[in-house]
Length: 457
Image 1 (cartoon, helix red, strand yellow):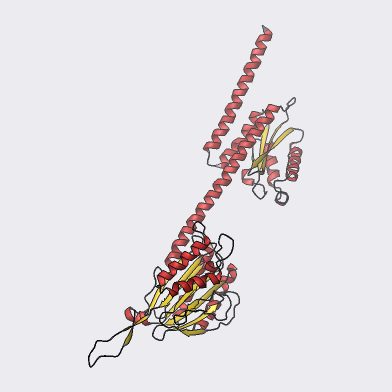
Image 2 (cartoon, rainbow, N blue to C red; image 1 turned 120 degrees about the vertical axis):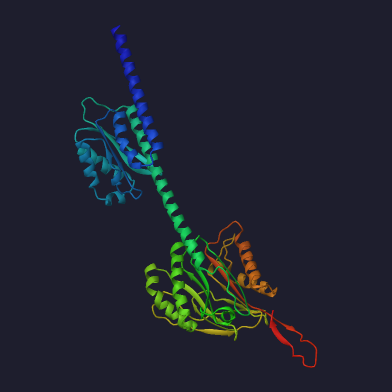
């Protein structure tokens, strides 16, 4: 009877210990599901580990992704002994941990230090994994005489370490999500600002048919085009007959930084246009004004600047290493390139720019574009290139299409080349500038009839 009673007490004790351990693990798993604060969860880990294996204490050491000690999350059970060990670990330099991030050398170094600091106590340790790499170590120790580790203890300790790894992985994923949400908000704000800065519609210029479109590769792009009146105070018919500046530019890069620089340059350029200077002088002054800002950002800007005078149909231009616009001549049905020597904006503080000019005739079409059009890649990996653009441009102009039709046809040709379900690699912008064609109308018959005259169509 005595033996039976002792056996029953032993079984009851084992059952009680199993229930206690199950409750501890269930509580830890519940905390993992419920806690949104990683700090609170990690505070439970050493306590649960030490109780599961009936140890004297426990230490938790975790690492950042780059291998550094995550000092804010070093945890231990209560007691002066554990507190001193954590202080010693927290004082370690980051260099050795970063040099051997997640490697065996770090584990050996850390295990050796913990065992030395804990003296004669028995120590058991296991690794914590997150993102398929070693993200920390979990230690339990005991100085009690007769204490020994069992396989059940090892399994329990590893289970706690695995739950800790899941918590660390969740925190990394949550931080990534929060970072992406912040970036999305910034991009949305940047996209709204940029949409307000780019012209929402083309201006009315005497004798001109205009169409423009910008298709950014990201929410915020570095492409820039603008139509700027030389005399913004003019209104009505007088404004239509004034000289207009037509600008196409590209800030090297994509996303928010490129969009912000584009915004900065827009303000500078509009101030320069109001001074009424020649295109080459405007680019020279713009380069000087933007030098410091572009140097700090390590970016450059390509820019084609032109101004058009409706009464004389004269187009003057200067180029800061931008893609030269294409000019289709109605009389010859041939395409010319409008180019002038000049360096990128922001490359050198003092540089000179050439100035060219041409007289446009009714029916002529000028095509401004950015390199996102010609450098777009197709299914085979080849680029759209200038030759394809010239051919598509000639076909559209030869049909007698209006500016908007030409624009739509060019983007349609580009989409077929790239693929309807594939995004562009870079921002792509196109401006079509067409002189309206003139038609001959007969005058009214009679002795005082006027001779035939030309009027815009």
